[in-house]
Image (cartoon, rainbow, N blue to C red; front, side, top):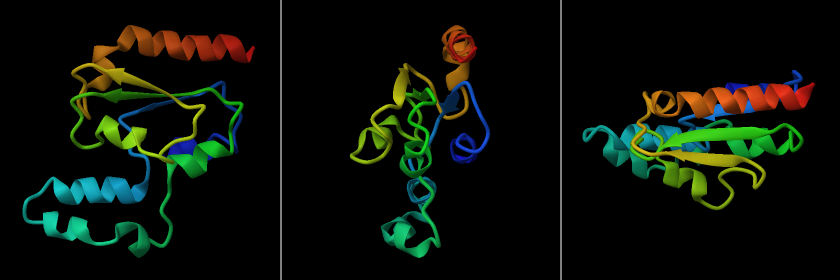
Length: 127
């Protein structure tokens, strides 16, 4: 999320995100749901409680000319890929690449070659 917000301040060839939550409120809610003893708190209006609900939609809407890709594991229970497909989760120009079997902590291992090729392509297009 931090990279998404700084991409419009510092020139970048592109932005590669991995295992991303669409917003802070979604990340907090998913964290609460993960623990049985905290799960009742997930029913609270988390977005309304936060002073600012940072989101990929907000951050990435300001940089429509910077290519951005999200690698998201299909087995990620911490930041499920389904959250990125909900309405207004991310801007339309953002490419989501599902990574079969990837979890929150190992998605990059499943697609190292594609990951590196994506970064190299962004760098080549910047020149």
